[in-house]
Image (cartoon, rainbow, N blue to C red; front, side, top):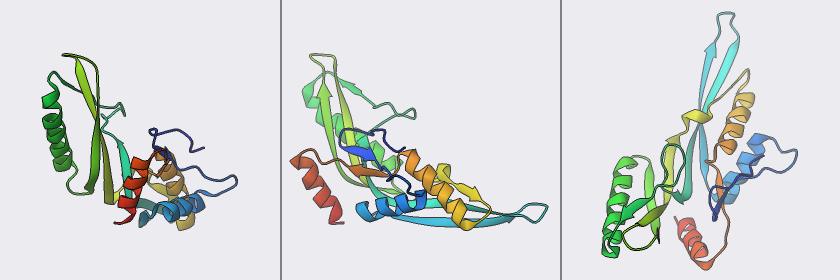
Length: 181
């Protein structure tokens, strides 16, 4: 159910068979040292029926290439290899200013491709998402427990809950650095 891949090094969390979403989320939190808090609200319908709404607030470490609104990896063209580092620094500064309030940059790397005057680079960022309200994973139900279960399922399916796929020593070093926070 939670099996699509985010990148080669990161994969969304996969629940175990017969596991309810809140237990799967608790297991992900335990394994990744993430934090999920809930903002609950209670409203009553005109017929006095209670409707509980919960919205998750996440703190976790995420790594992924910089992407556009559609989820496509951004590629930045350059013609001179000496421009690559300057371009990456500018892209990272733009990223920092855009996400200053709730993201703390841990590390970044870039990959170059192409030849001659048609070179492009992509940038991978690793950051700590800090106390960020995830509006699109809101859950509603007749009880607080059911609302949390719905929100947990949405959160797990959204791609926000990722885990590391350790494939090389660089990533092991990166994970040890992250866990030191």
